Amino acid sequence: MAKILVIGSGGREHAIACAFGQFGHTVFVSPGNPGMSGDAILAPKMDFEAIAKYVKENEIELVFVGPEQPLADGIVDYLQERGIDVVGPSQMAAQIEGSKAFAKDIMKRAGVPTAGYHVFERFDDADAFLQTSDYPQVIKADGLAAGKGVVIAQDYDAARSALEAMMQDKVFGESGSRVVIEEFLKGWETSVFAFSDGEHFVSTIFSQDHKPLLDGDKGPNTGGMGAYAPVRSAEKYRERIDTEIFEPVLKTLREEGCKYKGVLYAGLMITQDGPKVIEFNCRFGDPETEVVLPLLKTDLYKISRAILDEKIDEIKLNWDPGYAVTVVAASGGYPGTYEKNMTIQIDDGLRHKIFYAGVGQDGDHLVTSGGRVMMVTAFAPTIDSARQAVYEDISRVHFDGMQYRRDIGAKDSSNL
Image (tube, rainbow, N blue to C red; front, side):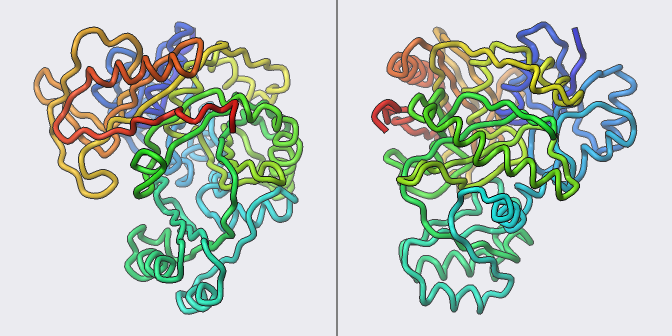
């Protein structure tokens, strides 16, 4: 069995740790959070130099990077230069998420189906474009924005307000210095991961995230309020997604000198013309990871080794035949300002799994410390029974101000 270090602290990293742990591997998480302590060994929060030292001192065989920020900052390059095996794309390849303009340029050259777009670095130029546009328009901060840097503007006033927030008020810092304005795609959304070794890839089951805060996809965008998997109706598009999206984009990245090794996330819109890419991420999505990995019945360590050894084409992914549904319990006020240090109480009778995200510890109690506090996840043979189970479980979770959506997975994928 291997010793593995997972980098990150959220629900995604908790799910990754559990995926490794179910096959008997010893898992460390840096920095993790107190809710993970039963599933992993918590390591300190460390900079790149300290991580390299920790890996050597603890004889860790593999580092798996969860969040996008350290990937964009070059953690993979740093660790590889020191002879450490690490799963994740290089800093250059991670631009597929770190810069939406870079991603759009790659897609254009690869012939990947996506929304039409324009890139602007000056507010006046972007504003002039919006004044003569048809609506809705999609406005995106170019850089990383924790999943919140996207606004679907229904009219010019909303579009200008979003533009001012990004480019002038710098609500996303320098990530909004450049914006991408895209055509609005009509259809239904799904997402899928690809494990890529740079030359070959294998894609996972499909999942569906629920981004808006409120039931019925209303309210402000969030980092994700829940997800379910698999999305059966997306399966008929798998061959097109593999051959028209993953294959050409990975080939184009190779030709650019940034071979992509790691997990590539494709957020897709299934339109009348077929699947089109909304966005790429350079890592597992959150909360999609919390429904996809629990259904994976292939050792994630073997997958990771195949990525590093460029033998991913020799891996066959095996899946549980059932469904998983995860519902995010969020702090009151999220995705805006929210209070912290609310005591978390969990009643007896919880049947399934909680993946902890924004939690801390006060004495013997877990307390809230982030916007998305935890992901309550249930597994069952059907989507309806999984939904019933997850809502029974989340009814046993309590903290002041807690909010969650009550319609996660309610759209029967067979009718999409």
